Image 1 (tube, rainbow, N blue to C red):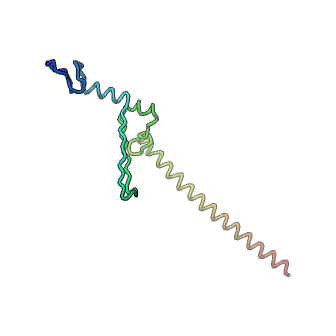
Image 2 (cartoon, rainbow, N blue to C red):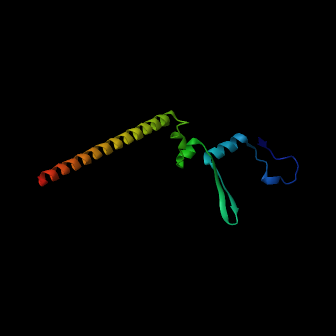
Image 3 (tube, rainbow, N blue to C red):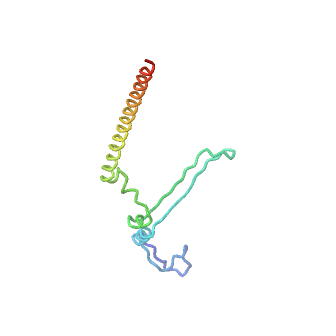
Length: 128
């Protein structure tokens, strides 16, 4: 897209002087600086909030996004194979933790059961 000032002497709308701007320049500028579009939609009925939709759109280059702390694609398993491996490792660790907790609970229950039996034997010996 090229915007070029016309040949007439009439004023140009939207401040379009004799500058030439192409789409690549605009895109480079937007990606370099970044662009944020934000909006909220609320549906209320008699001052009762029924629905809220928050919309956020960020357009920037990867370098610009990283510089402001946006790097979700690095941990998204759909976009990053390393993240898929990390997610699998997390699931494996969660499973191992669950198994260890169950094992500890069984051991504690068995220990408590043994203590109760020992106390019962001690009481019997005291009575005899």
